[in-house]
Image (cartoon, rainbow, N blue to C red):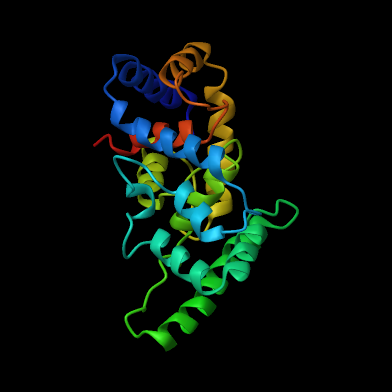
Length: 225
């Protein structure tokens, strides 16, 4: 990555946020704040807690909406086996374990639960967790200071525009996390950007740094033609 390119796109991000042009993207931050305020893996009714965490009055685009989505699948398996579903998320959020192992094991557990669901109802044929994007959403909400929401198409174009050497492939999510964390360190040195974000997020209970800021950055970089 070239520092001058990073600074160029950071200036564009500052202008758009400062001018209010990116107010629609505040939905991401609202969803993050709402999750942080409601997540409790030990709550007795896990399905009810999960539903509360993944609810937004204007848009559920991050999790695919209420029906035929990653959210609806988790709701269904939580209704079927609450404790197993709870254990899936405990395992995914266990920072003592390798993150790639956790991501892949979560997919495997979804495969298992889909098989059980489809045996009861043939309409179940997809669990929406066979890609890192959807599972990384959970990590980005639970540990926003460490994990960025993984949108490979957006990241791939961003990496190209930033002239990243040896651009990561879709399966190389660990490199994606590493690059995102490196970008965070660079952007955190920009006090003007941080002050703009503090004003932008003043009505939300958000702690900076957050990798959601890097996702905002990727949207600026990746959408430049």
